[in-house]
Image 1 (cartoon, rainbow, N blue to C red):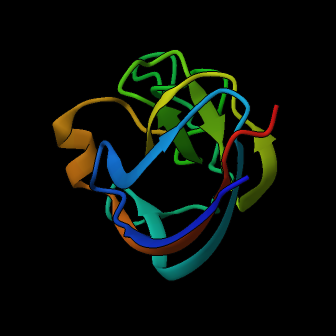
Image 2 (spheres, one colour):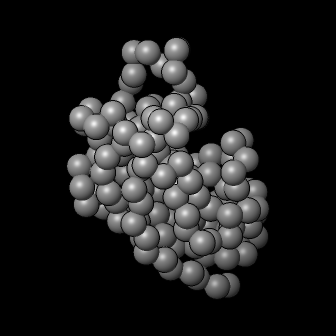
Image 3 (tube, rainbow, N blue to C red):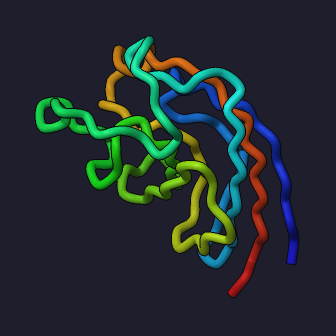
Length: 132
């Protein structure tokens, strides 16, 4: 059993926050989150890490339709069907797919909308490899 610990900063203007971590089915993932700069959508709309309900979501759906706008999430690979809700943090989530781990904020998926995001997070990521 190998344990990998990594510390990264995440800026919500990034559509795919790079972790430089590859995960495999059976791994356990834990992420602790600390807000460094206020978490805001569209320059000024405050949000928690769990996100908020957006009344125009039917016109501008977020990437992950089952989660709130601006919720902190992760995806495995750039394949949009392997999402993990992080929110305020996660502990020992069992990974079922393999690929590179990315961090993202759940926003309408376009470069324009990601550019208006504000905030900064420190993430402490712990990956326990090969738990079967």
